[in-house]
Figure 1 (tube, rainbow, N blue to C red):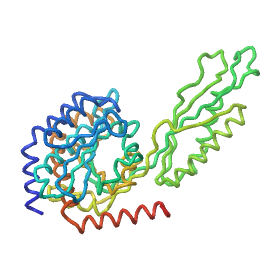
Figure 2 (spheres, rainbow, N blue to C red):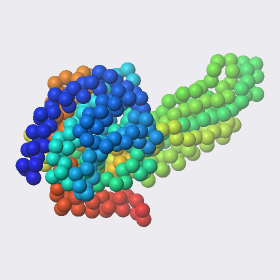
Figure 3 (cartoon, one colour):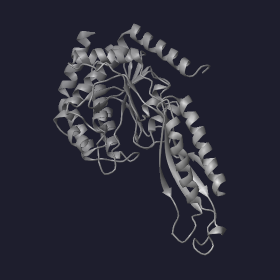
Length: 395
């Protein structure tokens, strides 16, 4: 195994300039979710040149893709690429590094694919910041034939045991009746007042939320003129909790808040999901252990502490259907705040160039472990089956 990994590392080192150029090209052409055509053309073009079979679009998503290179009938390991940017901030979450690292890992593995006797799958997953393409891929069965899935994320710590919160994105629409706000307000039904009441009721809930739960929202419609009683008002909320069961309880309580607001104001309401639901991230510890050993060999010491995120990841939906990891590698630039201009500057600098090659190597080594170590693969599968059964009894 050591000789195999040395060859992979040499292959990636020989591709260093190309991998960095890809990361910087995507950085210099920031594209919002589901519009990442430059990034997809760049990535799939390189993969096709190396013999990967390209499927695009994927699951009716124009900027999602699947690239495969088979060396035998062994394990199928997916390397996930993200490449969407943030409006106004560009790649302030480092998705350009994620895409380039998964590409680099795939190219390194491709040089010895016959010896690995498995299949490398690169999944292009757009719109992580908004509509979470991984949710669609998981729901439509695009991951069902995989034995493992992995990606890395740049940050300010080195940690592999990452968790995230389940998320529900709900839009509440209240309808009332318009009337002149000064001469005949009693003839109206104020939909905006209902939304304000909804926020007040949710605020009164906050001390009683548990399991890492949170609710935060905005008003997106609240009327058209001060002299008209608003007949329509709309609010959007993110509801989060550590588990799906806990989140369902929060949803029920927020729905009760909406019902109370409607009753108090005489309005009516309905709600719906305006973005896909995110499931909690389930890090496969057997797979994580392989990653930890590999980054240690590369000179990186994992923090050893689980990262309990207050945010949500569409990788969580992946982890519900295939053994998965979503480790972080530090940019070694002090305390960094994602989605900030400081983060974007560090990503484009020497720290980003260093970490993308490190991540590509660690991903490739871990994928090789899965393909060549039957005992490891068995542990990964047994843990996944046990975890899913525990989380979803009877499933």
